Amino acid sequence: MKLAIDAMSGDLGSHEVVEACKMFVKDHGDVTLYVVGKQEELEELKDLANVEIVDAREVVKMTDSPLGVRRQKESSMVKALMMARKDEVDGVVSCGSTGAFFTGAMLFVKRLEGVERSCLMAVLPTFNGKGSCLLDVGANAENTAEQLRQFAIMGSVYAKYVRHINKPSVRLLNIGAEDHKGDQVHQDAYKLLKEEKVIQFDGNIEGRELLDGNCDVIVSDGFAGNIALKSMEGTALGLMKVMKKAMLGSTKSKLGALLIKDNLKKELSAFDYKSVGGALMMGFSKAIVKAHGGSDARAVRSAMELAYTMVAEDVVTKMKEGLTQS
Image (cartoon, rainbow, N blue to C red):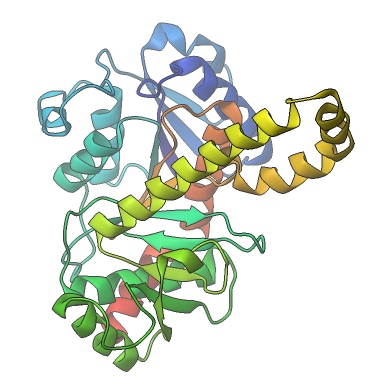
């Protein structure tokens, strides 16, 4: 197996990626890492077995225009994606700008045959600890009913072979539970999903149920999915501030906080993005994984593990088969 790692595009620079690579190769002697970035910043990796350094002098910045990626052919991000295009690697991992990385993948990596639109999938943490796959979370401003059907198939295959759920439950994000709810696109999507034989469709799901964990795959257009994801992120951050203020408000509350600190930390760890493994760009012929822009070494390593599992389980081929059978 061969994976290309963009070492330069994240908020924290190359150091965290280098540390992640050092941890990863200890456990995966069956993988060759092609670490792409400025050679002088990757010196610690040069003597490691199964690590190849690919020099790249440009960096795609978070502030760069997504379309600007086409002009940055010497950047670490584009060089990593071009290796996938040329079949030199099986997957690509980057912490760079989501817009630029997705645009680059669209420009330089082949899409699966029959896929109308690629999408971005994230695993939502849930209160029951299971987690749910949400797609699309922002790659597309709008989608057709047929595209939502394809998202459902790809998400179901991922849940089965990567998350090891035998019969993943698929639901459609909508403004109500009834089958007639939503605009025409969502009504048509409901009918297509209900008739689809290769998935287990269990109806609509409302926004207030997203974190319950009562389904495995949640299908959404990119506009609604992105709003849902960011609303939950904002709510979580706001609740943390409120809890901190309440727990530090008096001597009595500080004592209470001390008593529940360990249990609280354990429960909140389920909502830590560093352990999730990043978002997956679905519909491409290679495993394309987007780690959080502020990823530390642990988060980058989790993203690499996700790419590894995608390739090891041959998930892309299984997605292709699922789309063909539908």
